[in-house]
Amino acid sequence: MVGNRRGEASRAALLTAGKAAFSSDRYEEVSIVDLARSLGVAAGSISYHFGGKRGFYLAVLEQAAEEFWGDLLAMRGPALDRLTRGIDRFLDEAEHQPRAFEALYADVADAEVRQIRDRYRVQLTDALVVEVTGSDASPVLRAAIDGFVSYLEGLALHWARTRAISRAQVKELVVGTMFGTILAALRTDPDIELTQRAIDAALSDPQAVAFLGSLSTASKTTE
Image (cartoon, rainbow, N blue to C red; front, side):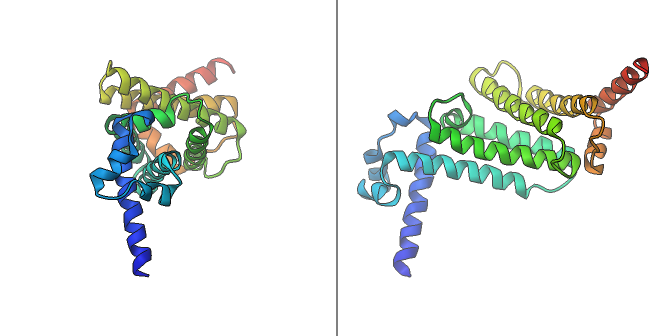
């Protein structure tokens, strides 16, 4: 039992160190020998726990994705507030873990890394669809939300690489695009029924109210 606890603690310490290393340096730039030496452990411990550098790298990315997803699930409060805090959390990842963020969200050729990214992307899409409608019955909304998630990833990457716009402007773009995405889906599939949470979020944001007004005007002109 003591040995198991020590093994778990050793694995956790390696993952923490690996997160810092792979967040600041590219995969090929990280030396597991140097990393192990900095922790005062044998380099073989990485092979023991993870099967080598490759397995270690994938485990670090998996844990980073799990932590991010766990933070999103733990958020409470009104939908719009959770959306803006979720965007902030996503931008924190891009800012403070740039290499790991690039690895997960850039258009990578690495199939195993892409598999990690896609698994959590599906979970995020599922959560947003249920938040908006309470079910996943509309293929139109699912397609629209999936596109929104890709947009969010691309915008965060652009911001992290260029800082051409402010964090506040990124958040405004994401919130506006989210509402625009939902309204476009409503135009395409009028049978979509919004949850009260989604309606309250729309009514609490001036951008969304303006969008709703334009949607109503457009509907009247086509009658």
